[in-house]
Length: 538
Picture (cartoon, rainbow, N blue to C red):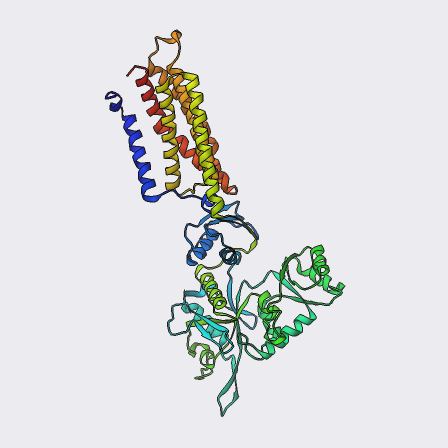
């Protein structure tokens, strides 16, 4: 045994085992959603992007701002994104989906012109003098979210807002000021389709005003700033004139945002032309007409309508030129919700989107599947039982083949070490341990057993090669082992580099690659030394 311990290969084995134990002791094993539960979101972008890096950065920033931990994001083929999160509750999944579904284009409009975009903002929610929430008499809440503009953006805002207030009463110093419209994901590539009744109802609500809408707001002005053509239909559907106009718009506008309550026949008409359909339900249907949120408000991505003030427009004090007017860098978004919980959720989501920025393209679709923690524990138990069954089966076959207890125990020992080290290194390098990773580890150990059998068979060659030393035979066996490992690595590495469209397959490839490297560099050389010692030549 003293002679065996002189081999550096044995000491490398002991060192690697200690490192693996340290990884598990200090970091634990990071199990994936298969074993601890979680949700996998699959996002399909509306079009391919030159690079997935900006997309991944924005989504990662949004999820980090929302307080999520242990989030994993992968991009594939410049149009697919896979997001893995540990949350499984329906409420959390809905919240996360809402965050990653939005493109997040923030725009402030006036007279159909873009005053500001999300790129104009340098900080969000940094002003402590503005109350975040205000409770109204009916139990509803108004929320406010302050943000700060860059100087260049503030100058553009000043120039477009200049003299947008008119003095209507000199004695009372009353002004009639223009409205600004705050949008997130303004549907610039779509058209709106609604019923005449819905349009008239929305028109009345805008004119009457609500807690979130100033009085005398014009629905036509809202639609002008949304920049979205609209079509009003009756129970008979779209007219031939409307269909003709829609065909002309299709080249630049691919999506039809349709009031969900319209007959299916309207959607079929639009589909037959070539439009993609996005149905939007009318909100607060149980409320009286004047208390509803206008359908146009939701369908256009409108977040807030804010009336300008004379002090912002250069009307009070009066300025002759835009350059003489005051530059305002601090603005805020405000909106109204029926409860504190809804107001808090809406404010937080808006804050996250402003902080993270917008995706370079819109999201075409999003789907998800989830695994509950209970299911995950069952999967882990079954995986452990399968691993134990594999170990027992392999042990029996090896013993029956060689009928040599010490040699068989050496093979099993190095296989167990290889499995443990591969498991800890895979987790330590950031790859979650899921079913695919377990399969990869089992496959790696399987190839390890094959290689050890090759080494053992070479060392046990018959009398016709007695003149060849055990050392020479071990070297010849290692040539076969390395050639086999190289073939496996050549197969797995391209999957790791380019195969993220199959997230589960990548986990398998990473695990088997680590297992093969551990085997070739650590456990196979150590087994060769142990086998030579057992067979008597050292």
